[in-house]
Length: 254
View: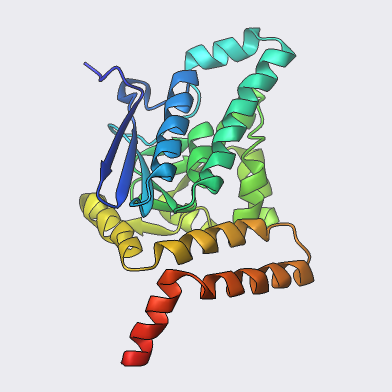
């Protein structure tokens, strides 16, 4: 029997682990899961000791998109109700970018439709060799709309066009080549490799990483000169942080 909570949330030292917990439904998105995911992300963001957030799925799959009940609701709702529903998912994608520390998607099995959107919205995507990615929405006359704002920033325009108009599934290695996935790990060593990867954030300055994440996304859409000036401003701020002063002192002692 499944745990009734749509999300299992645990903080283990510097790692906040969020597990989508609807394995019997392939971790399909519904209102309760999206709300619980937002709540966990906000909690992790408020914890000063957390260095990285990992989102994964219980059971065989990461997330298969919207469930049948949600699709039924979409087909029966008014434009206003559907806009509110879409806005809720858009807020989730935006929240992931506002969380101060890196948010990592650890993908086993299928990440399809909204599930692929969720993975794409994360800062980093790690995939097991047998994982599958795709935006099959066009096959049912639907559009992977909100995630396109992120997808076209992650991959080339030509690749983004192909992904959202053909609805094909990609293997993990194909998704890596396309730019959707950062690293692919063997299935039998996936958990260990993910743990090893995220532990890397313990060895760098949390302050520097949070400032870097904020600046990277803040620069999006800026002109070259404006982005360069923002970088100069933040460079000056970073120099004043305790982490930077300690880091320089350690370097000078070598």
